[in-house]
Length: 427
Ligand code: URA
Image (cartoon, rainbow, N blue to C red):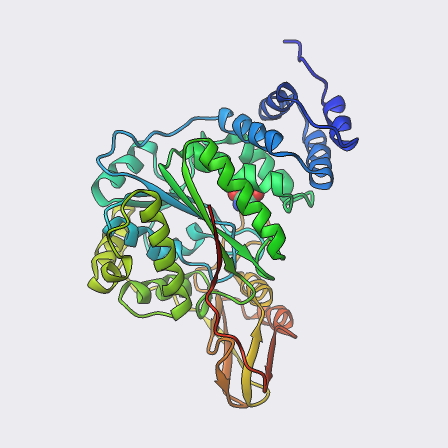
């Protein structure tokens, strides 16, 4: 087959700050998926996009081309309406675990296609795999049956969904081209639109532990994704939320599952409960069911029942003890005073180095690895008290994890604003 374009001319156009036209975009995404455009050519184009940007038309067309590279799912045969949530990734971000069963218990089905950890950010599938027996891979038919029966499913996206993104994402990960707003927005939204959810709530993280370190950049990402979703007929809203400090008191795999179960049982850290309930409210409103208050449903134990059914349906034992670490190392407070800062990136890198994340693609993560925090910014601490407990099965990892936390917290006399984790709402 003769190709209508030449990859070099498309790369040079973006390098020279020109707009790519619709036909060029459709071709380059399709040709890359077919293997006609080589990895090194797509790397050069991704870098040109990172440096020179894309306008809204180009981003929308690029997203459409990634959707067209694979299958589209369709939930219209379900007896439920559907809503999904996507987080741009953070440290201690276990919200999907209590949120999916909570929204299902409120009457809206949640088809949550999740991912694995990326760099210092944790992955929902890695966390759930800490539960004995639980499996992430479901066929489309299994997913549909579980959604109809239980109302919530958290599983891996199948190979047929946006294959262009699977290839391009792996390439960006190793070519320094992850942090480009057009590429992040099209990557996330192509998967969510192809998945076929009726409504979508985006949790766009801002701060040291997020990919977007500044509020203006996070806002631009959120606005771009919200317009892509709404233009594709998916009711989409975004919350901008703080990721300068970890969410909750745990960052890792089994320890985050345990904290999520505490939330489902009516306890858990205030920031995790607040964000779970806020996101649930947004999902219910976007799906047209805002007369149910998720805070009441959480308190009633209804979400815990759905959690147990959701875990069991995927082979997991929700009552089995979670793996515990072979070794722990406690970092104590060096002084008395107020914990004025606990840096999300430092904690995320420490958890990653302890074995909660991967240093090479395909590596096995440790279920019991992670960091347990004994205080959050604003809490009073006393010199010598435990501040952080590091957990791993391989104690030779402690040294580099401790190094990651060096300079990652401050204790002083200052006050800490007890502001909400939600910074803004974008629709
Ligand atoms: N998550 C995604 O799915 N894609 C990105 O590009 C970044 C975060």
